[in-house]
Amino acid sequence: MKTLLVTGGCGFIGSNFVQYMLDKYSDYRIINLDKLTYAGNLANLMAVEVDARYRFVEGDICDAQVVEPLVQEADYVVNFAAETHVDRSIMGGAEFVQTNINGTYTLLDCAREYGVERFLQVSTDEVYGSIDEGEWTEEWPLEPRSPYSASKASAELLVRAFQITHELPTLITRCSNNIGPYQYPEKRVPLFVTNAIDDLPLPVYGDGSQVRDHLYVEDHCTAIDLVLHTGLVGEAYNVGGDNDATGIEVVKTILDMLGKPESLIQYVTDRKGHDLRYALDSSKLKALGWKPQSDYEEAMQRTVDWYVQNEPWWRSIKSGEDFRTYYARNYGKR
Image 1 (cartoon, rainbow, N blue to C red):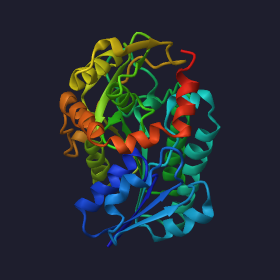
Image 2 (image 1 turned 90 degrees about the horizontal axis):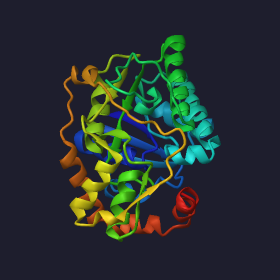
Image 3 (image 1 turned 135 degrees about the vertical axis):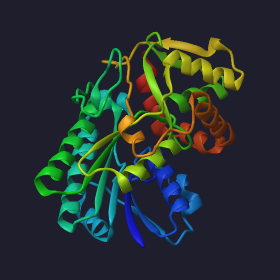
């Protein structure tokens, strides 16, 4: 059996990936290392807790004493662990530097020492910055514009350095905006869905013209799986859903799907340094045989339906002190 160390496996994308891999591969063991910060939730993986092939370890990827024995067991490492919310990074970026950069270094150094077969770093399209027209290929320079994206770009450079200097077999994926089950409701789509369910205002930054691509999380999981097993070592791969939409288009889609009025839309002061447009060229990944299965309408409908059907999950989060404090701080004066 192969042993896969997944870091950040209790978060949104990580938990979906753990479930996907256990369902697909009967000959895989998965170790899930997660610090259980505000966005990590053990409830995301209740379905696999009884699986003998799954093991959860609570710990910090910055702590070498925790990381080292787990990497020693692993054939593959997939690093999801990260602080991810741009708005929080604007409020204060220290945690982003610590986890996203120093934590990645700790994982890489342990992976180098114990010779893992493959190390995959899950990154973001935000490392490219903002693009007025056209699409980014993987050769585009990294031009991050927020503390969050700068920390993810820095982590990528460390990954690249370990591949070149130490010949560590690394891979990088750069995904667009994921949507789907278990996404912490500070992010735009689950925030809009859950606010709309409760007839609360949906805060739209600026005029809502910022363009994002929307990737259903299951499609992202299939892409990571493919790159992990067949990607060319040392390479980065864009993972886009081919589902572009502006912020105002997203909010209107959600309101329409829930049968809610557009009077719930509330325009608020724009995010500082807000990137205007992201667009990925995923030809390199598609050449490996991948393509997204969910178009924009399907991806959004599946996402909306999940939050409608799983109110206890998100209500317990939104009633908590961390979420309420963040929401008041981020939107209170907008």
